[in-house]
Image 1 (tube, rainbow, N blue to C red):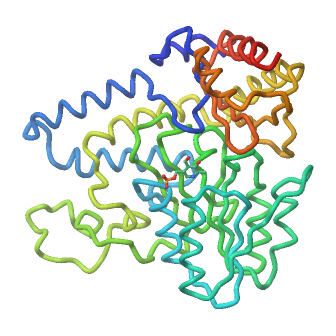
Image 2: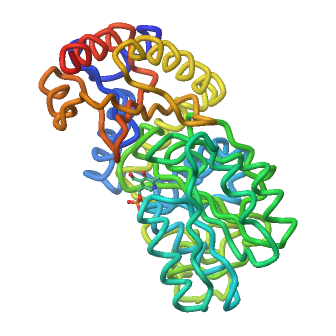
Image 3: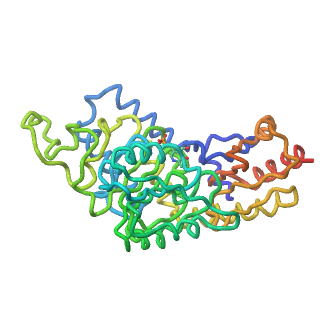
Amino acid sequence: MTQSYRERFDIPADIAYFNAAQIGPISLETQRAGEAAYRDKTQPWALPASTYFFDRPEALRAEAAKLFQSSADHIALVPAASYGLAVAANNIPLRAGQDILLLGEQFPSNVYIWQKLAAKTGARIVTVERAKGQSWSEALLPHIGPQTGLLSCAQVHWLDGGQVDVYAIGKALKAHGAAFVLDLTQSLGVLPIDIHACQADFAVAVGYKWMLGPYGLGYLYGGHAHLEGEALEENWIAREGAQNLAGLIDYKPGYEPGARRYDVGERSHLQLVPAAITALKALNDISIQAISDQLGAYNRHLIEDVTALGLVSDVPDRAPHYLALSLPERAPKNLVERLKADQVFVSQRGPRLRISAHLYNTDQDRQHLVDSLARHLS
Ligand SMILES: Cc1ncc(COP(=O)(O)O)c(C=O)c1O
């Protein structure tokens, strides 16, 4: 990795932070944008209301749309993945007896909502497991058929980093008229996706992990068929003509165009939005393909280094940016804690060690991690 990215972050040289999959740091530039936004709030008269209520959220929507390779009309500003998934569940018609497909050990925000929808509609949850050596796509395909009502899954599984071939799976689902919902939390911003080509109905991602943005802002994509759906709440700012603040009690039946109707109340998040714009713009300026290539190369190097220590990358179709390595049997139970004591930050999810590097990680970080692992696994 080039040193120039590291210099954009407040990460001391002796810290090896490999935990973007849990929470990503904001850059110094993003921090400055956030501080300036707080300063703006000290003197609310100094800016036109249209700037913070409308122009800035629109700029954020446009920046987020680029990550999906879509346009601003398809993007809603949401506070969490669970919120976006609730919008999706609210807008996908299911019949009793249809299957709701989920992947095994999926993130809970992408399970509970479907359990609720199954109870409400009489649809049936089918959890697809992946056999050893099998990719998630290979495991999924045989389950897709005329009985399928919906699949909701991640593009990259949070526990093992395995990818779903969203294009092949989207095609198979649509051949049976089934809906497709994606949780892109562990991939958007670091793995390219052409959301229209994969035919997703809805897709959501949080902004505080790989996107290196503030906590509390996420992005929901709504497909062409869902731009006139039902919002979870009815807030004033999503209604047509809301820009005319003097005319708000001239209550309007219509909404702002596209997926804006799904925006959460107070979506203009005065203090968060400028920071989020800065964070997403930085990713788009580098390009998502370039980020994916860079993280992929970094991780291939890392795998080479840790193989001799008994850590194994054994997940078929692993996403380039995501490492979830099987540990050797001799690994101590408190390995993550021991690494932390050495200023190396990773996480353990299930039986795997999750190492999630980002642009700020350097060759020195990698050596730091390898040395620390060698010490605790010897
Ligand atoms: C795959 C995945 N989805 C979603 C989330 C966050 O969900 P929520 O925004 O509902 O808190 C996480 C957080 O770890 C995650 O790993």
